[in-house]
Amino acid sequence: MKPISGIITTLNEEKNIAAVIHSLQQVCDEVIVVDSNSKDRTREIAEQEGAKVYVQPYLGDGIQKNVALKYVKNEWVISIDADERLTPDLVKFLEETDLEKTPYDGFAIRRRNLVGSRWIKVCGWYPDYLVRIYRHSKLRFADVKQHARVPLTNTLRIKADLIHYRYKNIGDLFAKPERNYSSRGAKILYLKGKKVNAFSPVLHGTVAFISNYFFRGGILGGIDGLTLSLAVANNSYLKYAKILEWQRDQQVREQEDFTNVW
Image 1 (tube, rainbow, N blue to C red):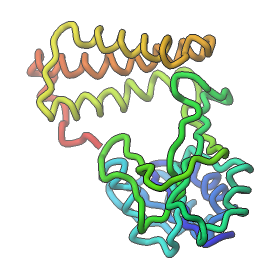
Image 2: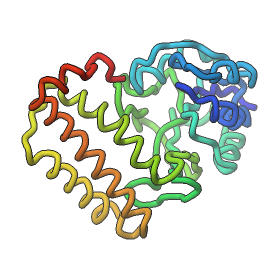
Image 3: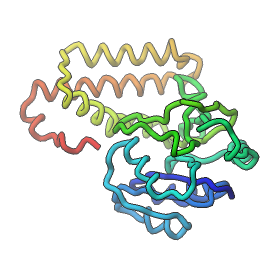
């Protein structure tokens, strides 16, 4: 193992936490788990597997990931989610690279997104380069609540993958955006004062489908490319349909908890 701190942010990840800790322990001499008050055995299992566990109510994507930097002992960190795993090529790269002497402050790795066991290479899903290995004195996740990334400043793209078990199956692909992403996105826009009209859901859903299916290569991905494009379009449609409903229906709006976005 090398002087690298592995970072994981969690919420109810008892099914994944042991495997992701073991994945990081191939190269990291410490693993930090920042947990958002899980109701299952996530923290218990993480401690049993040798991770250091800290509790922090969820603050949003980038902010939450940066919380762990207060606890790490090493300059170099690798930050992954509970449903991600290091590949042998990525482990080899870290074992062979002298991080103390490298001129770079971070490395962008390719994320290999899976639906079930199927590797999806269309709709911008591969190569999905993300900076996940970095000097935390130089770089960190942007302090934003959604879609946070580490900036590409003085970083190098490497030919090594991080496996992302993104969705369990097609049903999960449709259920997660409907349940989480569309509501979150809708609340964020609504709280910013976004106004929509009756055409907005259809317009945004249609544009999302055309963009992903035709311009981002979904058409080349067979049934999975078509399904993914439809799921993205569905998410976009629902986001604007929910905003429209809150504008039009006071009863529905009053039943929604706008303080619980994250």
